[in-house]
Image 1 (spheres, rainbow, N blue to C red):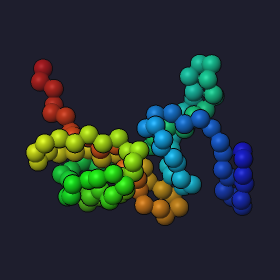
Image 2: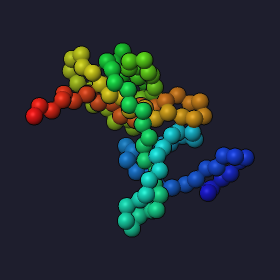
Image 3: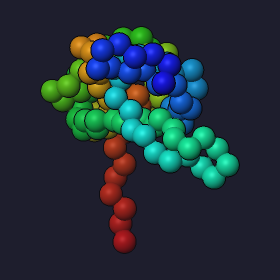
Image 4: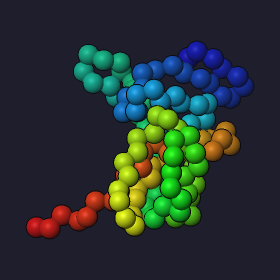
Length: 116
């Protein structure tokens, strides 16, 4: 534990699965899981809320992303894959418990179902 204020504590641990340069803010929601053998015993990993829908505006780095009935902020570290045409996307948002705007962790076109 690195800091404790009242009933809230701040801990420091390795983060895995985030895009390079991603910075967590106080209150960002993460999942905790056991680390790989020989690594740290507990690591923080992205806890995302997926939203499926059509983009309501053309996203750009460090801008608001609007999709379906959700919105959040893209950062220069968000993983973004755009496609030509009017396609459905999946946006993975990281919500914040301290009232900060949700951040878009990843934006990608929805893949067509696999045909057997």
